Image 1 (cartoon, helix red, strand yellow):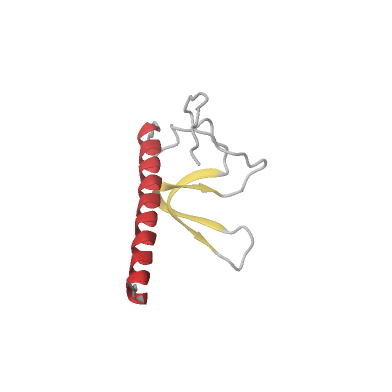
Image 2: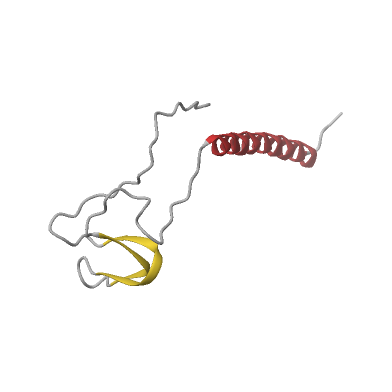
Length: 110
């Protein structure tokens, strides 16, 4: 009994499809399991109350315009919802949230 090339190729494609489907299902189920376990919280960007004391280089704006022809040119636009580091001031500092958190244990499956 002779198997045609079309039948052999079709069987090979079906095997590849099953392997890829299983692989993708494993990845997505692992991602879903990890995201369900994380304690997500939103940050209100209408004020800076969710942050530790912010230095003058941090501000809230509705958007930002950056002139690519000028070094370090950041122009905040009116409004809120966008956190901007203007890199201005005597000593620009990083900003930190006021969240308290502990160590996390991660299970990595390879």
